[in-house]
Image 1 (cartoon, rainbow, N blue to C red):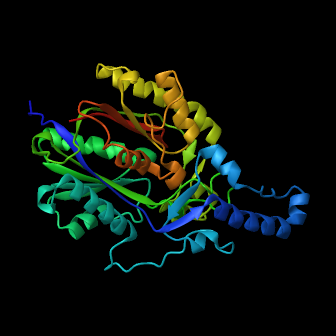
Image 2 (image 1 turned 180 degrees about the vertical axis):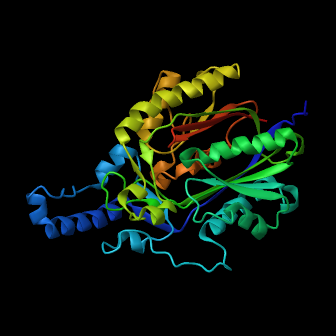
Image 3 (image 1 turned 60 degrees about the horizontal axis):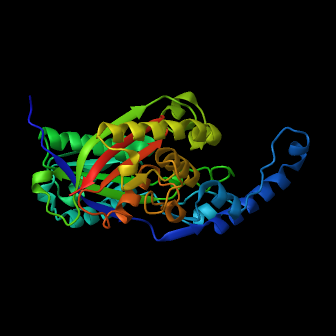
Length: 376
């Protein structure tokens, strides 16, 4: 049997675009678009041939989600009611791609915090909800840009992409096939959001996160977290879906139609995912000989503040405090798989030796991934 090498998370990185869109700005653009749409289609709407677009308000968004703003790669195109989506110039094949650029910013931050250079890393995993191209892998492009030898590959696991990639990194380090793995989540989600849909136009923001997973024996950073165990679960559901892909050419359908963009049945997701995630987390913590009350910090997926509060309430049998389960989606919005990593990056340095924490993400699939970790 192969020897298992204990693994640790030793560095984290975070990068976001400079552009901020507040709820008020987003709602203003959406409402102006909706009013014009309803006016232009008044006859068809009155004849019940079309459905009028409902108006929105900033208070609705914050109450429904906890989101107050989001960072985006392009702001002007999203707020232009004649466009209603980001406007990004196409880059040449000789230029660094958008996602590789984002990834490298976060990666360098994580490498610095872990005290690692390119020569210390054997593998790069880029894992996120969407990649901007099918191939070559964004991870290999990042690997080349950072001067890392070894190998790289991409993963797509929607909002659980970060934790599922951390599982693969942990397994590689434990098996001895890599000394250290760089896991990056360049979540360029704004191009896949339907900005003319009141119920989803506010959900996502752009960001990149990164973590270093390495052999515990080589960990030298100030804040090291030993990985005690990992757990994953998937259950098929159509309640969160995005059908964008190369098949649109063959099926002769609109490649940018509403079904090709992010869409969900939010009520069903809330009803089904919350108990599933709470049970998953309780079982995972119990398998490590601990109760939920013994966990110092819960770094949870940042999709909806009401979901997070309900899940932690089920685990702890009380209303969660900000320190127990920190929220970052008010600033960043939903950032797909990166949310729990942002929460970890922002809220881990205050933990003391032997404090236990859990990183968990959940989303489309359905998919849930978690890691139980302990501060060294």
